[in-house]
Structures are given as C-alpha cells and as structure tokens.
Image (cartoon, rainbow, N blue to C red):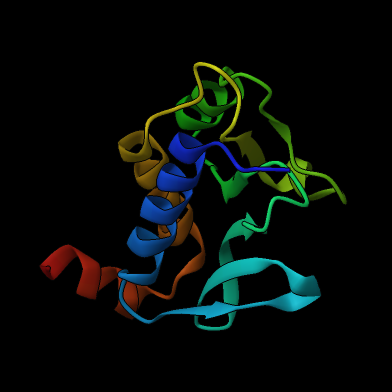
Length: 126
C-alpha cells in the first residue's frame, strides 16, 4: 500500500526534528522507529514502509496539549496501557491531520517530559 506523500513528508519532518533534539538517538525495537533521550522513548514513529498507517505517538502530560492532540482526526490514547500515562497516537494520513509544526511542538513537549534536566537545559540554551 502506498504511503500518501504529504503524510510521509510530515513523518520525515517530525523524525528529523526529534533526532535534532539534544542527546536524541534513533532505535528500532519491534521493527518500529523510536526516538529516545537518555535511553527513554519520547516519540514512537512506527514504520514508514506502508505496512501500517503512518502515525506518531507522543507523551503529553500538559492537559491542554493532551486534549488538543486527542481532537486530531483518528487520534486516540496509545495502546498497551500507555494512554493512561498520557501517551497519544496521532495518525498522519487522516484528512485534516495536524501540520508538521504542531506535531513537532508535541514531540518537543514529550521530549521535555522524558529527557533528563541537563538535556532540557541544553535545548533551552539553543
């Protein structure tokens, strides 16, 4: 199944942004792409091979951001009980899905929740 170009572009922008954050690393547990800070996942990027719809999953503990993310078309609390901890899965292929800039804001917030203080200080100085 072909991945819609605009969804793939968004996914690539979000991935680049996430990996540009201080100390961010990319890993592929379970065959999925994730970005980690200090060995802790701050964004699940799923797969970009067309086997599953493109989506990003972020941890949003700020109530407003969390509620806003859940208004995205098709968005839902993340599976495996992660939703209870504030994780939200946001599909990228749905009509009206958030723009890359907003997704990057949410990725940064997720990073700030998970990353150690020294990396957040580095981000704030940048």
